[in-house]
Amino acid sequence: MMRKLLTLANKVLVRFNLVIVTTPQVLSVSSSSSPDSLLADLTEKVPVVPATAAPNNELFRLFSKEQNVHKWHHYFEIYERHFDRYRDRPIRMLEIGVAGGGSLRMWQKFFHPDSTIVGIDIDPSCLAHENADLGIQVRIGSQTDNGFLAAVNGELGPFDVILDDGSHHTSDQIASFGALFRTALNDGGCYIVEDTHTSYWSDWVDSLETFIEFSKRAVDLLHEPYVGRVGLEFWDGGAEALEEARLTYLSANLSCVSFYDSIVVFDKKARSLPRVELRQ
Image (cartoon, rainbow, N blue to C red; front, side, top):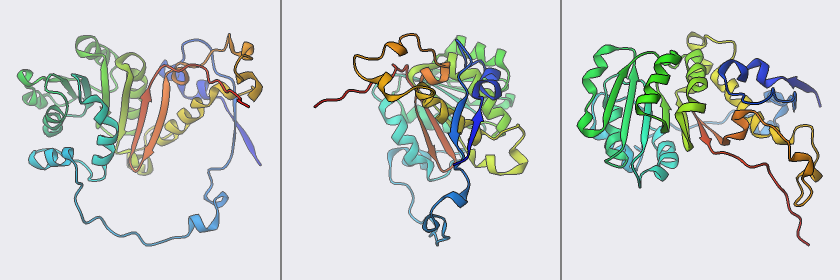
């Protein structure tokens, strides 16, 4: 099996200030991304029927009553799966991309009524969609302007949910994630990037790697604690070798990366070093 070396920090993470201690070790991963490496039965072309029924959940019903909001139907099940746990308390949500303002109103109706829903956009006309009485705030600026994002976070954050529905250009998606994940997203929060199908459309790819490829590297970092170590080091009562372990910030604060059709979800949670226990 071919193996390739990926220096993740130097190529991706250092650029976006996600490393807090040391450059991670060089990760050795299998080169198994080619379709040729999949079983033939799994790569056979099969027919897929078009969607007919509308989503059957509360969020879609709210969407159906709104105006000036644009969402793919299959997103609604994903939203409810990841957002439902935030509905029993006031939260702070940041949505990148305001457009017609319909999604801000939809989120305000979906989440706790005392929540703060913040939208950012480069179009000054989006200020018309602010409604402070309902907890909807709008700020004008670029999703790649770190100073602007820091100011929004300082005024209205940090946030429990960050949703990137902005330009959909791959460079902007990566830059916003790098600027917001560490300082603007609460522990226990989630960061969602939607419309990631633009990673497969040449007109939207304007970075050295697509956002999908960037996200795949985050999956590697989930497994950073195991790189260069053996299983015995994680056994209960025998983890002395891990006492001084250092991980990149993203590895130490990422509990899950979920991939869906056109959506990637990052769940933020401070991690402990893994430990295995054998009971006989």
